Length: 249
Image 1: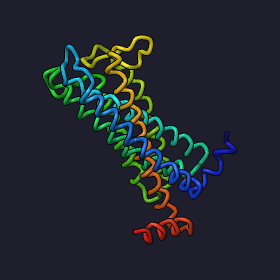
Image 2: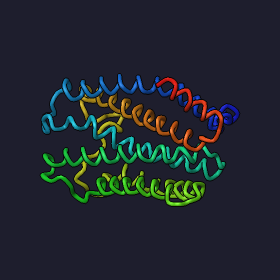
Image 3: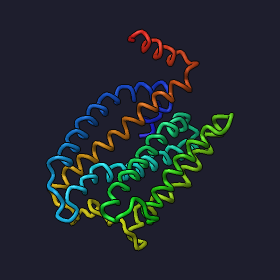
């Protein structure tokens, strides 16, 4: 496995791989999001208690899940960057962080919209909401640290350390509804033996989850390509890529 992965420590090889995969991920993203959103927002049945207001679940739940998924991926890259000193892993951190921060902001915003009719208020200092807000601050902190130093390697290491330390917040977000008495509802789809959601509502949610996962990956890929070019601008291969892109326009 490591023998197969080793060539992709080289920026040029990594760029070529990402460039090949991105169109496929983008196409699958468009299809799955279209199907999931239309099915969930327009054709799934209304909830017997919440009516149509529950439909925001098809945006809120996937964005919340992949706000955590993106952070975990960023922390993994941080470990690789610190332990194996792989530059491409360092450069993936600023590619992931803004995407994860956007997912976190969407989760918080849609949660507030959902909370207003359910709780009668836009925001409460609930354990789940507060820990998700802390996740947004962690993303902002990682981005700020990365660009805070004149020496980019120092900034990358500082950002990687914060990303790794911040992982402790992820189980707090996930288990907050079980550890504390909160307003936020409990798990719905992670109880696989008996999900707390009807099948007719579950399937569009699963497709929306797939769409948001692919969207997150696609956006990270797009940003990662730019990071690779930015850091390798002095290399002939990067200049060739940029020259080809300019000629195509």
